Image (cartoon, rainbow, N blue to C red):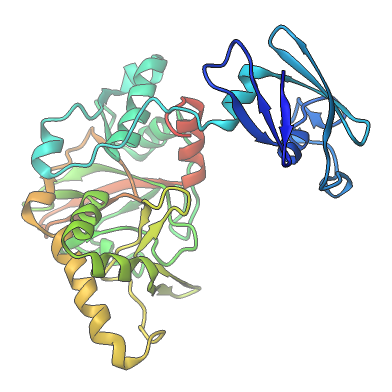
Length: 365
């Protein structure tokens, strides 16, 4: 039977290896009776301000694996002991991140799935999502080299995020937008959308036409670069976690701007959850005193140097028929300079939509 102690309830049960301790108010707040919880919408159905802060359990009754509680306000609740245990403890996920260098990823089991199998077999779709969670990237091969088939492939799992570039977009060296991507210049490794409050979660690229030379794609595991920076230069790591860097995008009819740390830390885990590194999109930097500027440049250059290490850059030529999907919050991408014709199509997927699919598959908590 449970017992109360200093606003806490301690539950002992034969189905538990160890007793579990819960806050009385938390337990009352997590009542799942029909009056408190609308199970069809998975939402609470009461006003928390009406529950007394000094709420206490006045009576318990155990029936098999269910504990019935009577509260001091007269309310009655019932809890399955194993469900209660799962609610208290974070769920175990089936896929964990694997950080990589170029040599690591080339000998790994990242997903490179067939287009038809991916559309027809849910296990293949799971494989692709698992690869995005684990390595930050995945590929779909044997896709017809056009924008329509690319859209079909992505919308099989994810809705497309609309931005100023549209939903599905196409770019070459024709300067349709005020962005260096619409040139044939080399692009150093970067994250997209640093000028948005919510940068895209996934980015999709498919080279549908290619001639000439150059134009190799490159990917870098930003989280691996962050890890190395933290190990070798703790001062730079901590500085880039707390210093806000402005980024902006300007073209006729649009002016986006956002200011955030380069390295964003999850307060629950104290681990990085997003990298916002883009040397090109940086705005005028005037939000720290000029006397501190050299400290910023020293630390920013330290991260840039780590990202740009040759062993961190995975280079490959993206050919027509292969879609590359990558986590824009983790991986950086770029390309070498090219000549001739190189037409890319692609799109963005919002972070929320990516996480929703991964959570549905039980791959993230």
